Length: 238
Image (cartoon, rainbow, N blue to C red; front, side, top):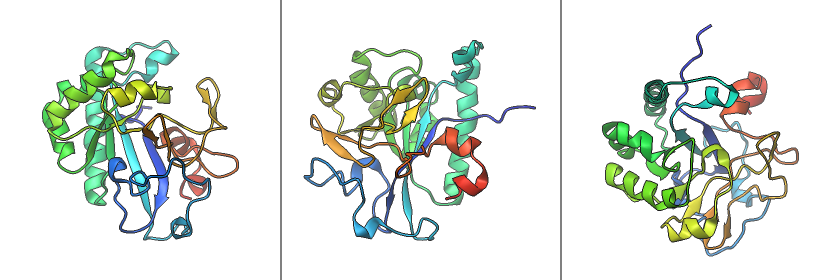
């Protein structure tokens, strides 16, 4: 069977009440002076997860489609870009239908191949950096990717997410001009990372706000594209 094209990884972060901005860099909790938020959210954030008036911070990672290469497969550079381009168009159509605003973490390399589409995204959503390339990284890419994305999108780029949610030097991130990092998945994923000891809610470290991906309480079940895609509907709908 043909696999459906996938634009990127989607993460859902922190349940928000009505009226709160959806964009990461405008998050009301991030703009407070607190250094760390409690493990349990404030009372006004504790709402029925199935209520229609809840809000989520939704983010999409847009990159060169290179997952098959992790398993020994080969994908041509043209196909890497084309698969993601198709997926992004599908995501934008869905978001427009439901009036969703989100943060798009985009690699500078991908953005340079589709500048008009990035500008279209920027008209409705926040643009953030997903590094320069998805398959390789060096510290200089932090500033270089931010500047490239700002030039293309014509909007400030204040957020960063490392490919595959790998750790990033927060001091280097701050020096490169960022305000927040969304590279932390506070759970255990075999072969990837073990972040059980890290906070589940936004906190400040080395002058940078860290906005973790969403996980459930206690067992820290991750709520991102891989779990939603593979979990049964009765589980993922909650």
